[in-house]
Image 1 (cartoon, helix red, strand yellow):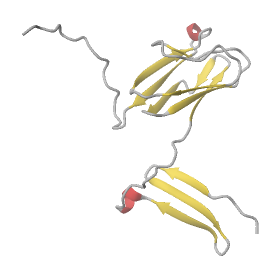
Image 2 (cartoon, helix red, strand yellow):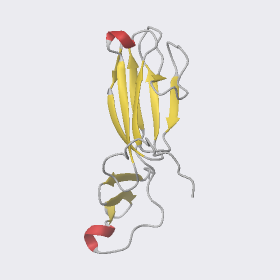
Image 3 (cartoon, rainbow, N blue to C red):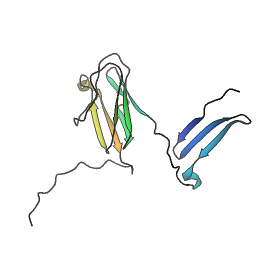
Image 4 (cartoon, rainbow, N blue to C red):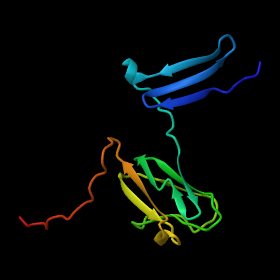
Length: 150
């Protein structure tokens, strides 16, 4: 009998595992902790990859939402050279025509970026990173009042 690999399907409230069964075709196991009143699984499934395509003069999608700790991968698929340059001067990619660039976002906020060459032509994007509690990112710091002596 041919062995078929186990598949896992992730959905909002839990994890479903599909296993081939020699007696019954496929066996479906659903772990839905919240819906069934159970506890959370001890190890959560890996997050879905977040990929932004770098095409000829376009980032697709140009707006991405991620959680703190998420990794975003920019993947070049066009023929022209492009870059990912963050507007806040965080490290970005080199000018390149192929390959990938990865960044893990460790703080909530809005991270705007552009192509070094084509940014003025509208080749821009944003990654909005939400904190672990969800909701809007925190406001930027300051201005702070001057310290007073005692």
